Length: 107
Image 1 (tube, one colour):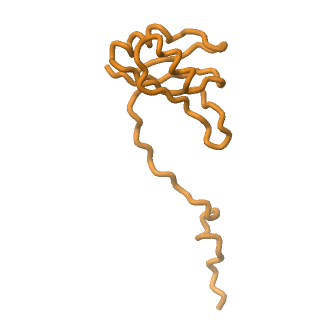
Image 2 (image 1 turned 135 degrees about the vertical axis):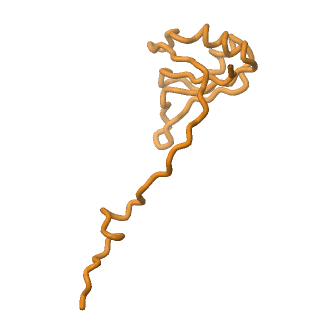
């Protein structure tokens, strides 16, 4: 199965310690991380929890999925592996005119 959980629909006030405390009721928490916006420092509303065993992960899902925290019903399931993303294109060098310079010959 897997012992790493995706936790979605978190209240924006939730922090790592809140996840650890909530999921600690179902077993040993190896890690708990709320994902944060890089620029603003605000929660993105989801995070990941790694439980000590598959059985503890199953218990945590059963005990928290759909439960209301801070007015929001949590979505808890086994985390899927991160998918490879294609490289970003572009580079901010203008609208495709060769880097912002004029290609017309001056002679």
